[in-house]
Length: 349
Image (cartoon, rainbow, N blue to C red; front, side):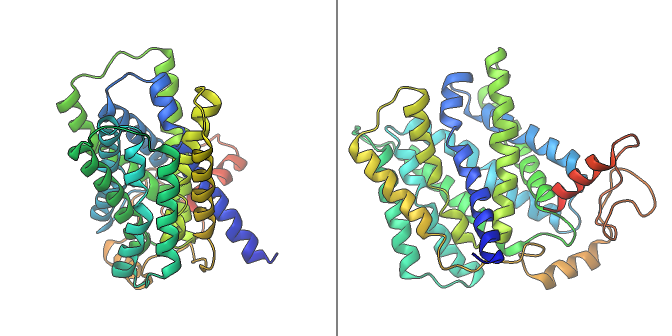
């Protein structure tokens, strides 16, 4: 196996950890968190994670990127989280996951419009097979469907699909890594959800030790790390490749339900898991990897840099940062050189 192929495979596997992590959200929410607080839970996932990553990245948006970060944060986080939870509460038997599984097909269509990538018969067929496989895994017999729930599920899928494609189209400013891009979006999305949660759900609920542990897991592993891997993957893979990893989320939820919650898996569900996983693998074949440093229009990035000037730094010092002033100030005195190198590597990886 050649080095580029090995690197691409490693990128796919690391990116796949994001939807695998998201597949544990249902179990954590039902077993550890307060009931009927979807907006508060969405805020607690996004805002603390965004602030932690923002401290690590130490890079603020500049110029037009304040607006772009707000748009991406609204699509990928601020709108997606509340609509996803709303659909899960209002729809029975995993229908929210079935409606959400059309995301790859939406990305295929948006990629044709915004990225100039013509849809292929294989990508459309793969998307249909993935949606059908997910439906076999999670869909159960139920009564009449709730129109609001179906609309919320579809809009949430469309929102994140649009965010994925726009993230690919816009790229990121020169010298800004996926860590900072993730921090901007999570912070913007969390700030969008916070007043809505207070208005709709009232004051935050009292939290016990289990709830605190659940929120810590959701904010750090399930959101901060997972979304960093997701946006890192968007930079190195095609938008269609990344979105075809999405079915791993409901598949993981089914496995966790079986292993940890005592839920059974029928032969039909196992067949659906095989179909959805096969579609996920098929969605990674035949696409060429993309460069990570500037995965949006390079000329646009250069113009923005010329117009906006230097990246704001949170800590001073002439010539602060590494690699020709990438917009990150020095770590506080007393930190070891190895820690500094580790954090700097995370910013740019």
